[in-house]
Image 1 (cartoon, rainbow, N blue to C red):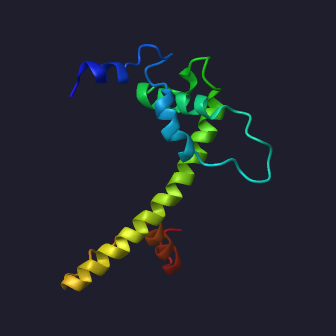
Image 2: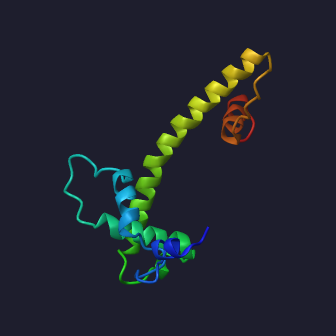
Image 3: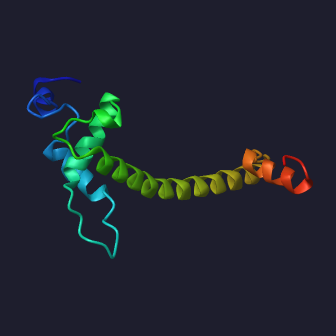
Length: 135
């Protein structure tokens, strides 16, 4: 509920962009950022500026080439976006695999048959090629 105390807490008028991260939000987000790759040079990009740039793109829906000049370059933002998405994706794949296993186990305990998984079209296409179809 919006109260006078909450309005001051969620006020974003003093930020450069409404999508920028506040100091309180940064304290929560900073530990979630994946560490730099091992063996390379140290990270020269400000991580908070990266998060601000990515949140700007996600909140406004602008194109990569329309990023304002005071944010990191679009190539840098895109590279970190892909890298962090991949790092988060591996965790999501592990989570999905564990939940799939647990739900199918729970279904078998109840006596229900687990849902059949559909094969991907690439698997079907490779099988068709082996049999002589789809040249």
